[in-house]
Length: 254
Ligand SMILES: O=C[C@H](O)COP(=O)(O)O
Image (cartoon, rainbow, N blue to C red; front, side):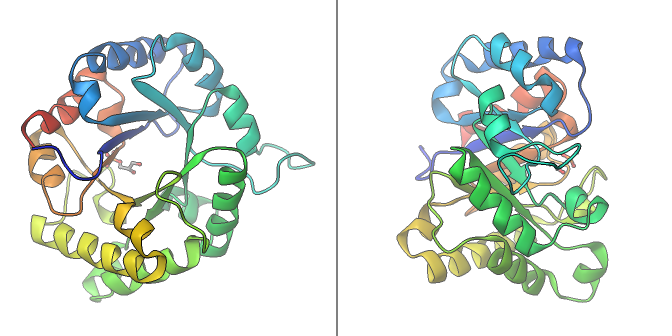
């Protein structure tokens, strides 16, 4: 069965990956150049230092590249930062924004994520905007409140489904090997879908909603088969081509 919304499997290499990692990227592109690549979109968000070389490495369009953050400004005196236009020039088509590691390590707010999203769109990038509750917020029963607030604050008003992707990543599931139950993921994604439709109408119905947090080949079929889960944002398991491709393989059966 072909899903109504074309799935997106995105890898986030985080602060991992040196030149030799480009061999893994090539292997992912090769692995997806078969019929599997016709079933889904794949993106690997590499460290900014690798983007240009990664773009030269890719021999086909089956795998796209992304950055992991961008500044709100196009140019200027912002030492150590990188603009969306620079990511685009280096070969990116996507950028991850508001990842919980940025929200924690760099105190990024919903307001800032919203401004970065507009900067990404202006540069021609699609934004993968991350939301998700911490373990404490979950224990306090505030999961949907947190997600709702982050969606409301992080998304500009003129969202379009071809340039905006939402990734639900429970913070406590990232890199821990723990995942929510299928029922909990379904509930969170159904809630996001209804909030997005209420705010953006038909565009909200078409937005891709990714699940992220300890996605592996062993749980990919279950997680990616959940209603309103339109793909995955994969951290650790995107660093090895065999692991990433095994997750993509789930779409052969879904
Ligand atoms: O961006 C990716 C997520 O933080 C998930 O990371 P993980 O798959 O290593 O848990």
